Image 1 (spheres, helix red, strand yellow):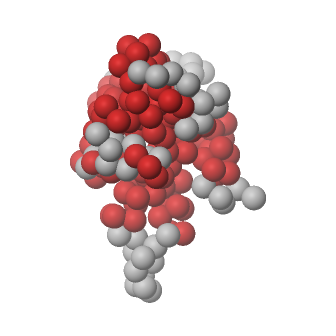
Image 2 (cartoon, one colour):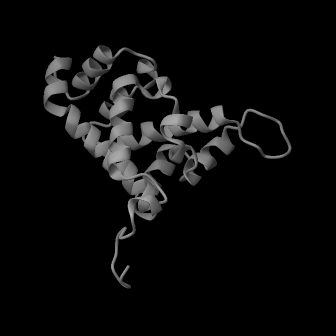
Length: 170
């Protein structure tokens, strides 16, 4: 690899984190099933290993273990909350749309897909979930995936919104 060239120039097998396609596919699946229905430890183990998720999980730790060990469930809950914050920040014109569509809005935990699409449509002041799906679904997935990708690979530029939304940035 030549010196001074920015970006990932190594072979795909040498990559440390997920590719944009991995993240896009993950976000697409989250939109399809919702955050609380995803098995994050198998679908996105890289998400659970993020330091931001670790910080959030430590702040909500349910165990009294002196070792400081964090349970996987705490990490998964923290990751779901982080995804909700990312989805809200990725769509600043309609901050409720992202969390609703991924099922991280309190009124939409474990809600069926059609109800989440209708909720996202209402957040945009539309009346049809199908119209939202046809006109905004792909764009919403791409914007959320892009924000998550930037959070992973350029955390200095994106992490502030996630910390502030989580109540830790004051």
